[in-house]
Image (cartoon, rainbow, N blue to C red; front, side, top):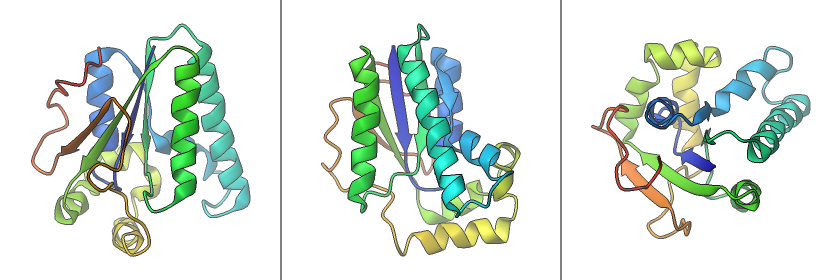
Length: 183
């Protein structure tokens, strides 16, 4: 089994890259908004109920997948590198899959703000993430969150042995991810 964690700021292309990687490898994609969009139909995003359910759904999917005979999972995640709790969450997630024999990978995407604001409006993003269809709000959220969190790592900060950082400002999501060893 393989577990691929794709991280990076909002609208950097995590889901699109995950879809392409899924197409190339046969690994299942569980992008972070799959749980979010389900839960926010029931509870506002910023409530304790939504936070609980999103976390519970994700944990159940991760545990079930890690124990399964599936070839693997790709998960997208908005990692706030300035929050130590998120390092703990990532470490636990990686450890879960590795404890079941999975090879794990972290792919970090980065792109400039102008590119991300353009990608925020793409038909695929708006189709898969209904909560982002309010473009004015979504753009404000991207810009505002940059004041409070750092969504890309510093050089050398991610210590995972199977780690790849890609500046995909000008790269299309269909560009193969050579050199990482994901099959």
